[in-house]
Figure 1 (cartoon, rainbow, N blue to C red):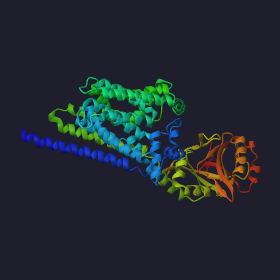
Figure 2 (figure 1 turned 180 degrees about the vertical axis):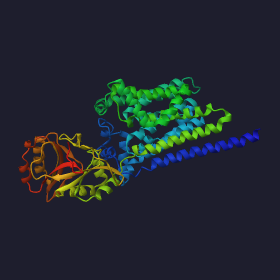
Figure 3 (figure 1 turned 180 degrees about the horizontal axis):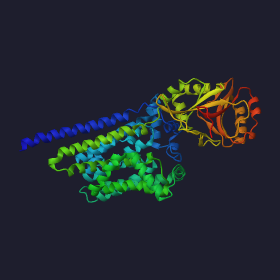
Figure 4 (figure 1 turned 90 degrees about the horizontal axis):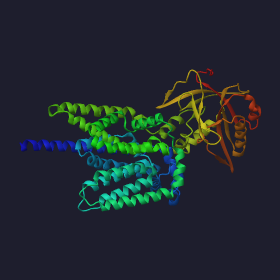
Amino acid sequence: MSTQTKPDADQRTRFFRLLWIGTLLVGALLRISGLFSSLEYDEIWTLESFAPQPLSVIFTDLALPNNHPLNTLGVKLCIACFDNPCLIRLPALLTGLGSLLLFPVVAFLWTRRRGAALAATFFFAFSHMAIGYAAQARGYGLQLFFLLLFCAGLQLSGRYRPKRYRHLPEAMVFLGGAGAVLTLPTSILYLAPAALLGWHCWRKRPFPCQPLKIVLAAGVVLTAGWYLLNYHALRAAQVWGTPVTGAGQFLTLVSDTLLHLNGPVVLLLASAGILLRFHRAWPLLVITAIPFLSAIATNAGGVRVYLPLVVPGALLAGMGLEAIYRRFSAKKRRLAAVFTICLVGLFLLNWYDTAPQYKAQDWFSLYDQIRKLSPEYMIALDAGDGYPYTWNNMPNAYKDYDLRLRNTMSQRELISFLPPNHLNGTDRHGASQRFQLNFQPEPEQQELGGFRVCRYRLTELRETPRPHSVILLALRPLPVEVLRQYTSAIYQAYPEALNLNPWLASTITVRGNVYQGCILLFRCDDPSRLDWSALRSRVPDAVGIYQITPADGKNQK
């Protein structure tokens, strides 16, 4: 009997080994693939605004959401060592790959079953959110790595004790906890329940618990000191969150966040894991619930704030899939295999279908498409998008926009990379605001080199605009003092006017004089508020007054 079962066992072991290697290899390639893509707004802001600061500022200025201290320190070191700005992502990438290697350890130690650990690792390896933040110079990928390091050390301290490095688990707990807190203050929402639940599960372990007690106690003291030191900055950072004011909003926050983090197939299998292996699932439910419950008191964040919840989601889904497989009798194992393959196929199909939703904007490709448009085409980007667009493509993006701003043709087109009937700019205080066009019928989006755009007609006005017309007022490059006088007069007449593409209009120095242009967008409800003739005649050819209408030439109702 043994001679027949041993080859089968060896074959099964080799099969599992190949699955492990394949899963980890594909996960690593997916994370590496985004390394040299164009930088995003928050990455650039960290690079330009925080990385040049001294360490005393980096580790205390936490009021703004783009300073994740350990990540900022990594960016600071990378710009000192490398010329390519994309390489500021190396700390995030290395920790992303580290998370991929740590997760199987956590999964196996928690689930205690090889099949469940493999399934959980598969779901984690293909997590869109984990992949995305492994290739962004933000702190979320680093936080995920340190939290996994903490959990792996906590589980090892309760299960196994290496002979050569007896205190390695405690070292992992300390480094993981410290790294997570120094990266993102929200880490305490994950560390605290994980530590308490870990202690509850392994309080009766056979190993000496004194080293772990010392590490956890030291961690509590140091973390409390860190939060007290930065209390005012952390309180100021709460303004970036969203208040949770009712049960409906809370349930929407939970459902939308979990769906975005895990996807429907993982959530379905996670539900099965909760039902079929509740004795191993309830601690993961507690860890998932704490960050959401804290949002009631501290405000809710974006989906990225809850990135660590991909870990309990993948673990529950892995346990669910393995538990379903075990429900099949030995005679129906082929049916079980087919069922498992179908579920994995459904997951991959959904993964492929939703991939564009998680894909970062390719600012290089966007510029390639815009530069092909002749100068009589004006463009409209989201107010915030102008920053990464110009930064990734400077100085050519500035030069291209300057040509469009100087164009004096009377009939032009506005190419908007925003949703139909929607433009966006900054108000006089610099805040991003939406401008609704209200054209009927609603303009249809068209394809432009892989980007969705809306087209509008720009018709230059030689007379006073008609009431309720939508005006695009182009101020071609002027001395900055003169430009301020123009904009002041327009804001005084139309306080709701928005600055379109504020990041694209750069300053130009000619013979010691600084010039700059801009485009203002507003609805001319009452034309008598402004002296249009004086506006045109003050500086010849400096002002272009255009009415925006649908591309088919029909006026709005």
